[in-house]
Image (tube, rainbow, N blue to C red; front, side, top):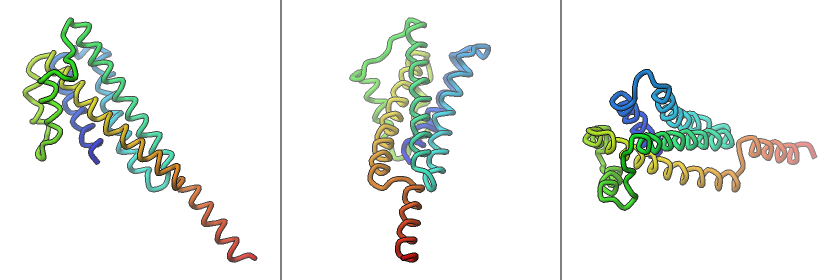
Length: 170
């Protein structure tokens, strides 16, 4: 699951960013770490719930998406409040970061050089959060379409029960 792998990168790099650039006394540090963690954990919980409840899977995946959006805003706030530049989508540095997602051996280390200064690190985080959110948006669209087409576990179980009763009690 690509979204989970990307969310894991977000969590690990976010923790490193917070250690380097956010005061350990700051409530923002705790909020940022929890938002990243919540994104990843809710993807995992949603995936686990998928066997019995598509509705729960969709809900938890949406919560993951919202948590990462909150973290995204924290990074934009960080750059603005520290008078640092938010790199545009077409900036060559952002394009280079985006392309790291396509490496077959992509890992935490692939992004390590961007943690060298606050502006670079925050922009790298913004980029990978956008990438993760894109994957979650695609996942949510597919989950919603599948749910509309096939229903959830409860609906399918009800249909089987109805069919059984119809075939065995007439």
